[in-house]
Length: 198
Image 1 (cartoon, rainbow, N blue to C red):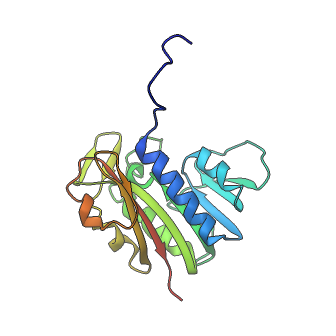
Image 2: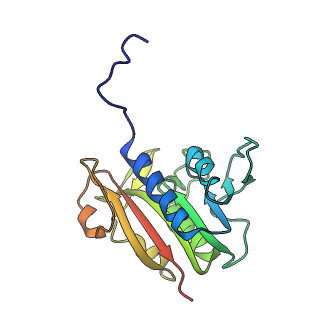
């Protein structure tokens, strides 16, 4: 098509790097089953090359591919027993919970309550992959929240932080960052790998 001669392939730096980062962590863990809650459907589909996947979302995903089950559910009331899941991801979703953007009820504690519910279902030695916009804290009307990256581990007091990675305001991705590196960002992406001891 005329006009498609761009000098490179455009991509969203948050979603591209978080999806690659998270998929590689799942490949390292090699769980028998991975549960994703509300992340990008492309990422969820690609994970089926690694393991069986259950995708939980307020809207079902009817794609009929091998190794992928879709469950209608809400992150504030996950349909799993306490400490029952070996591997869970929740990528670039928590910043929206409770703002009503996707038809959910208004809830100023949405981010905190979702984190508590995710923590509840992580089994002993299980992992949680979690990402959201980080930087100077604020709420952008009808869009998302941005959190201080140093505060996120406090939401998961029962879990230990294994790794922090992120994309800064310039679009540069790096693993093994310190959360403080992105604390003054405008709109960075923080990626957290947590594990439950025991």
